[in-house]
Length: 185
Image (cartoon, rainbow, N blue to C red):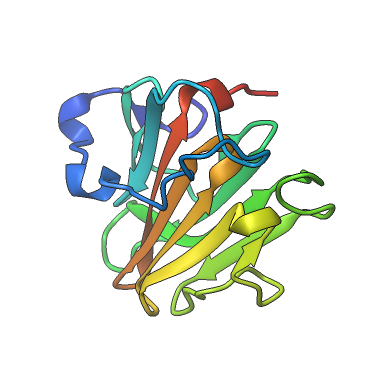
């Protein structure tokens, strides 16, 4: 985080709790191959503003970073964000592009990577190939909450909910993930 000029000062990175009210479809009550079966203990991460970052370990950071960088990278998915300078705001940056890559999972998602990309002015309601779901019984699904403004991606097999919102020209990102699924590579 030093390389990206991030601050660990919680006063400099007040986190909007409403952003983290991430919900998605709940796993079915019956046991299915592509339903998460671990303990429902969750970790959350969120990115908003110029950018303010709330990490999975509850630490807060404020980063003045320009360009692309990986926000989440584990064995199940990668989330990459691109930050651009905020017009007329000195050295502040904000997220102008966000890419979610759901890694191959032949049983519950796809034999190929599934991608979702949002760019300033374009928050699609489907994955990059135009589909809104993958896997048995929609084990990976994207839902438009507000067309062009808010989407939720749900990965049932790892009980993970991702929320992307466009506010003005920039994006906020929040993820709620079952703690056991946070195994990093």
